[in-house]
Image 1 (cartoon, rainbow, N blue to C red):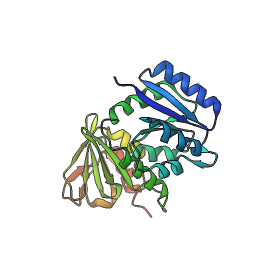
Image 2: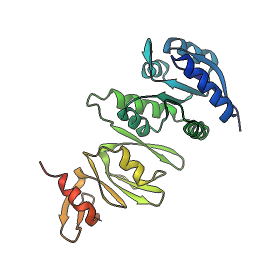
Image 3: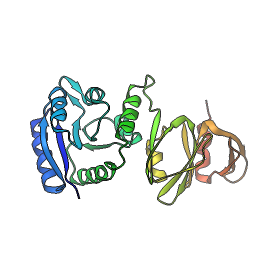
Length: 250
C-alpha cells in the first residue's frame, strides 16, 4: 500500500505527541510529515507539505477547523476530525461522510478512520463532502440539509427533505427519493435511524423508515399499513403503531 503523508493540527502539544505515537505504532502506512498548533500555522504547513491526510482538531486559538477549511477550498486531502464536540456536530460529520475521532483517541477508531481514508483517496470527492459539511454547519436553521450516501462507486448527495422512505436490504439500505429511482447504499437501516432527524423520520417496521411528510393515507389492520405519495404501501408493525400515531398528535 502506498504511504499516506499526513499532518496533525491541534492546539494541545500532548494530543499531538499522543496521536503521532499512535499513528506510528498502529497505522504504518501513514507518515506524519508535520504538526501545527493552530489554524494559521496549519494553513502554512498544508501549503508547504501538500499532505494526503490532515488530522484536524476543531476548536483551536485564532479560528477553528471550519475557518481553515473555508480558506483552503478547493482541497486535495482527506480530513479526519479530532473532536470532543457535541452530538449535533458528530451527526453532521456522518451526514457528510467524513470521519472523526473522539478525544481521548481510541486505537480502533483511529485504525478504522485511516482504513476509510485509504479507500476514499481514490474517490476524489473530498471537496463535495467538505462543502456538504460546511453548508450543513452554516445552515441558519441549525439543521442538516444534505446527507452523503455511500454507494459502491463513491457517494451520492441527497437533500434530506427529498427522501421519502428507506428500506432495509440486509447490511445495505435502499433509499427512495422523490422523483428518482431507488438507490442502494452501503449502510444499514439502524445507522440511518441514529442520524436522521426524528421529528421528520419514523421507523415503522424493522425494514422501513418513512419520512412523515410523504405519508398519504393509513389503512386499518393489526398494525395497519400506510400508502406513500409514490403509491407504494408499507406495513406498520404492531409494536411501532403507537409511536407512528404519536408523531401526528398536536
